[in-house]
Image 1 (cartoon, rainbow, N blue to C red):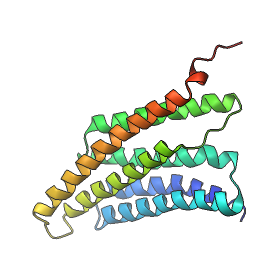
Image 2 (image 1 turned 90 degrees about the vertical axis):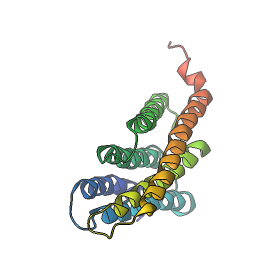
Image 3 (image 1 turned 30 degrees about the horizontal axis):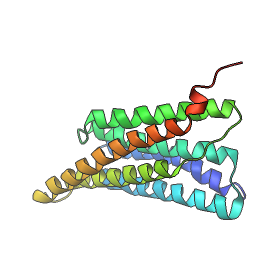
Image 4 (image 1 turned 180 degrees about the horizontal axis):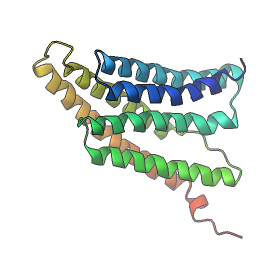
Length: 192
């Protein structure tokens, strides 16, 4: 029981896989199932941190794997939307590039004995990304052949999703700049 936060973190990895299956298969309510799984996975993101900080204690595993599980979940959803022609690929490349760079920096810092938890900009960025993903899912659900045609509502949902996706991409890039600026002493540190 004391490892409950870590188990919740790990559960996001397998939930991501199930979400991707639901996004790509064509069966009734598959996209609704993908959205539900995404929302549950997002809730575990908030829940594992809360439980770790208030009841079970924060672990080095949690500090590293919690942000990584978020990145896998978010990047998988955005890649799925690119495959479904719902989002511009350049937005997703910007998001994924930042996530890889920050993960690389975290690994470098771990090598130096420093474990860096997610900062406030990273948490805001993740929240905006998750909201954008939910809107993209709503757009996919509205265009589903298993539901009545929505008319103009789909266009409105996709318009909001596009703007929120753009905001998420730009905020993701900005949070990466802030992260690298804060860790510049590690980047420019000379070996030996």
